[in-house]
Amino acid sequence: MCTRLGIEHRFAPVCYPQYNSQWRSEAVLPIEVCLPNIRQIGYEEDKNDDRLRENLDRVDELKDRALIRMQEHKQEMSRFYNRRVKNRKFKEGDSKYFV
Image (cartoon, rainbow, N blue to C red):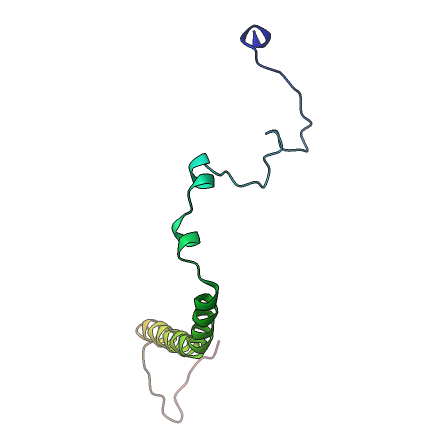
């Protein structure tokens, strides 16, 4: 049936991908090959270096924000846990069991 329809039938070993050497290749539409996209149009090398330096300057600020968020999360988790803990005060001589 395949030969009547002009379909070439090949057998591939199981250990290799079975799709004609397209493994790890990115599909590009013909339109994208001809027309520049927004990333290509807006790219200016000198401005790119300046923007990278600005991002490096903001790294410390972003780290501080992340630290604050982590501390808030830790406090929220401790409040959630401590909500179920019952406070008890023991006096000297009370019998208590330690597990």
